[in-house]
Length: 491
Ligand code: TXE
Image (cartoon, rainbow, N blue to C red; front, side, top):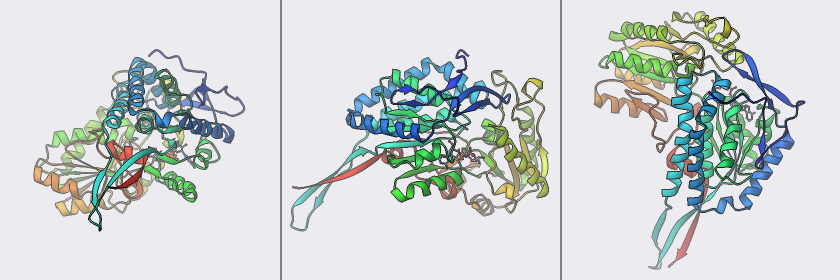
């Protein structure tokens, strides 16, 4: 790890980092230790206004009209530069999240260049629609579409996969010729500012990428979504805030893309390879300390193998190693903040009150004195719960799951679909026909069979119900970040 931690994490507007204002600042906290490692300059309404203005000017100065090949070249150069500064990004991500270095390398930071390259490729090969239309008078017309950038996009991202989710939105937005104002989570400000350095070096014109730091209400998040100069908002975060963002932009009828929470189910049939299913479940429940919108929090297991799966998962949970993020043997980091730990602990209390049997965890673990101040939590499994329990209905967003037995396929499908959310699901079975049949009946945006979090960046990503509106990924992103004009020519 090379990068020394910055003293200040600064806003980036019109191609320059702004001088920080000590009167308007908050701490960047390392959740592994609970200590502040930098100060973050909180953007007020005036800085947000400057950021939106600079994005507008960048569009007018020609960014939106640049040849696709130019934009793709800049994205590819950005991908190369992220790889050159790989350790800096890993260090920044670890300081903000406390996640294990092995995960930050393999997932979070590795995905950033992939996102830029994927959208450079996609935009380079994208076509337009075209139709020859028969008209009543026996002549014909040529209809075709011309896709134009949406304009200035507000990008609001959360803290669980900060760089991955940021670049997942920034890459397609820039590929399509938009300018962006990014508001990273107040809990994870570092990588968005680091990305500004890389994009400038990659040749992105000033004003195309701007970063404003701060909170939601009465802060940078609200100032940005309320700003009349915004042409669209893409948001990943909680369902409640997503709904609020939608209401904020509704009076100006701006498009929104919302990727929200989940209460994701896994179904394990008794024909599955149990060892493989248990290992897969352990990944889908505990990865990133359960703080991925795709993580499993409800597990339905066919009765004959219920005890075996519970015991296997408890063994997997016991094998997880919580500890120093820089230690290569660490598998599991802390929760993102003390505030979030209070939320997760409140669900531990609720589970007990609802009569759950705690198979493992359910407490604050002892991770060693030097990490005492961090927001650590023990991987936790419950039995004795059912779909009427609040812990089985509400998103907890921690390394937790409730396990429930079932008897028939129909029952399992009904239990899995009995939720207001609809993001992701997993089916574990060795019966291929059953795998296809059940996967297609899951009321979700992403339905896995015998795997989890296996992504093709060209495939649609998103959810239904409380899990969101719209899809990201591949062509879905190209559609969100552009507006088509239908040109109709009488032949
Ligand atoms: O989310 P928020 P929080 C879920 C998870 C978690 C819960 C709360 O269950 O426990 O949400 O987390 C910005 N206008 N997920 O409070 O509030 C905020 O500053 C504009 C699921 O952190 O949704 C941050 O940048 N912006 C999830 C971003 O919204 C506002 C990932 C997300 O914060 C705003 C994270 C406002 N009024 C949490 N209020 C997932 N889908 O992956 C807040 N923000």
